[in-house]
Image: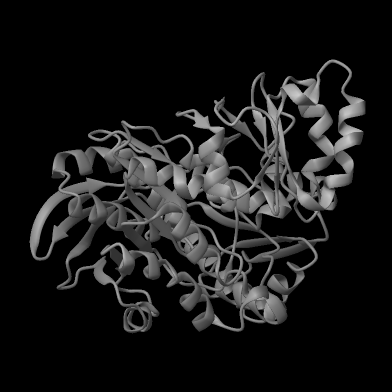
Length: 476
């Protein structure tokens, strides 16, 4: 936390109750994780699906936390905590009581960011949001004082904690906004107090929580409510099938970005190197702004770069800074990351997976394999949270792999068996090069993978986060 918080202000912001401590004192740092808590941190225990942070209040106090907040339903535990801490008197601690600690944290962030009033940019989408965010961060950090959500800090906890890194010198805050259900994008947008928003793409992600793609599009479009209130602007991918639908539903100003069209910000792809990294012209309307080379593979990343560049141009960033920012950007690990190992090339896109992102990664695999004349191998894990049509969507990916003429499929996981079925039903059996294999888990694969791969193979590894597909890299 960059700026200390007065207890009195915190009480006003969160409507919590002061149990002990001086309201004129300050909190200098906040932690939600007792494992990493440092001397003087104020501990906010969060309750999740599989854990309860209240179980670690005693541990946080043993690490010299300055205090904690607890939810009112745990009121009877206060005496227990007091008895268990021999070295501290609870009267010396800052102790607060809230109705809900996640709301407590969100309310702090909500009010904290409004103290400093930076320009706030929020990026969401079913695919590409992290890469678009990272590209934009690299552009804007060259000229402005910025803060942003690191890594996968795209939830109510991560975004709120990132906001607390803002200070009076911060010009711009950039937030990646994740979503697993209705109302989450609206909540995150409201906490951040967005001025600029972007939706990278709409795809079949988190279908376990939505009826169909239209519902997903509407949930992403929640970003527009705060933008309208703040007289902000929403950037939409002109080539996404749901952008017209979203534009009709929202009230805020919209700006389009996309490929070679008569729109505000667009690109024309040129050539690509043998690692699938595209060169492209960036245009504002019909005027060429810059010639840029991506440092990350995949045609889909042209859209992520164009999204980042469009927002930067809207903020009057010069073309030289935009070009340098995109070309020099370091993309997050396990997102189309190239690894060379033992005569093979691995495309590590393990971070997460849904049908849209898998198809984009497969396109890059096929492109690079043709450029380098290498055998294409796709190691595909389960795609999670796809709802009742999960089996059909996995088979669809198998069909897509076959359609794209991927040479070898290695499917890993309970759901990935359907990828094999879709692949098998669509392959040309006259092509003797094509192979497919199914393994129930990584352990079963580990004893066989050495015999399946060859020197000069190009290997894509892709699956949902829970699969930890990156473990397979160490088997190659």
